[in-house]
Amino acid sequence: MSLLVTTEQLARHLADPEWMIFDTRHDLMDTSKGPREYAQGHIPGAIFRSIDDDLSAAKTGRNGRHPLPSQQAFSEQMAALGATRGKQFVIYDGTGGMYAARLWWMLRWIGAGRVALLDGGFAKWAAEARPATTDVPVTRPAPNDFTPVAGLVVDAGFVLAHAQDSAHALVDARAAERYRGDVEPIDPVAGHIPGAVNRFWQKNLAADGTFKTAAELRAEYGQLLAARPASSLVHQCGSGVTACHNLFAMELAGLSGSKLYPGSWSEWVADPNLPVARGEA
Image (tube, rainbow, N blue to C red; front, side, top):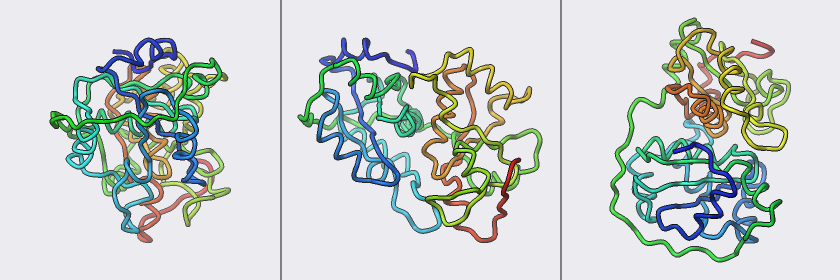
């Protein structure tokens, strides 16, 4: 099944019980924006999932701004909404997939087989005057048949151990000015993890807000890989959210096997013993 679903395809399946739609609109600087926009209108049948409240575990002050829940807890959450492993999941947000990709990755992480992003997201859906509603769908629990997938994440210890290893690469999905440390609007320390290279997640999108072609992405990520296998790449960002956008783009390009450092920069800088770099790589 394709990793991307078009607005036309989704419109034909709005009443399909085998399809589940999730709305993940969010704003890092205004966390009430996502629920507010959902309440004002969303794609019929879409279930809202909050990046902060539903797709993250409790924060300890040392595990980053959006720590991953356990695979068991997350699979139970999905089952409680009626999700099963064989359904077709379609996820959207209002910002080119920067938040939707987090839920895409998490569903793959618990073994869901058919997970796609809505190409162009809610902006494209609304621009085409497709239906929207304020009704909240009624959900019914299903048996938890998800089978968690191992080996998709690494921790800070792995990142530190491979910082100078030419056989591996760490890719930072934040904007260039945050990567360099010129500005830092969210976390208490500016800069990047030593050895990381920068690939801003928005580079995965075409000018109209849809994803670039697989061939374009394959060529661009091929330069980052520099003849290494896709499994050599680890993705990070500020808190393990937009890094999933780069993971998604690599999968779309046919480059499977890269991993996520979920804690990312916000976890890294919570440990004063870990090194920090500034400027270009």
